[in-house]
Image (cartoon, rainbow, N blue to C red; front, side, top):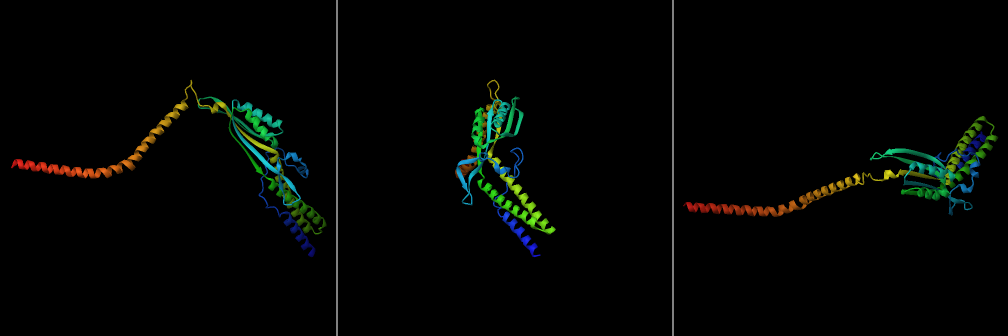
Length: 309
């Protein structure tokens, strides 16, 4: 009985130790945008250091003062360009991504009809290129564009999250080793099953953490670029023999707005300024005029009466 209690306590202590850092950082969903599956076993940790995008002159010092880790930054970009031939430019971007050692995540090419009846191509493509060549890729894409409508590059420092995952992984792997030793020493079937269930749970956590770490590694190693490609015809105003209906319509709308604005301004002045002023001045004048008129009427009537007498 005593041996069974000690066994149970040992298992609980190992699980608590392995899960101590579980809530140190929020979980990260694993994406499959990087192509292929996740590496298994120890292969993931043999990735070359150059495969991870690092800030060259920046370092992150872990809790353990003896361990220094280079910063891991995830960089992504978005771009909107205007070109003459969207289909040709999209093919060039695909070739560039493959040449740089990247790949295409998604691409979409469609046709749209403008108001003047002209049908033009539109496209959107999302690629991944090595993070150290992100600036080069952006420069080459913009070089083939007639106009750059918008451009944005963002970066996320995930060094702390990655270091936390490494610490959790070491604790879980140590717990896995000790659980296997305890299971080898256990004699009772129920004890073996209990340790086995805990071992399965620990291994599941190990696989999840390895997946999260590989997500960070591959996201930092390969930057995402999302490009909207707009046809040059779609960016130009409609013209008919040098006449631009859109410009005439715009002038007409502006004239209407100005006229309505003038009318509204007049009404405001009338209600707030003119009417109160007219009441203040007009009421006394009206009273005096009526008194004068009555006086003149009475005087006229008095003269007529005197003449009759």
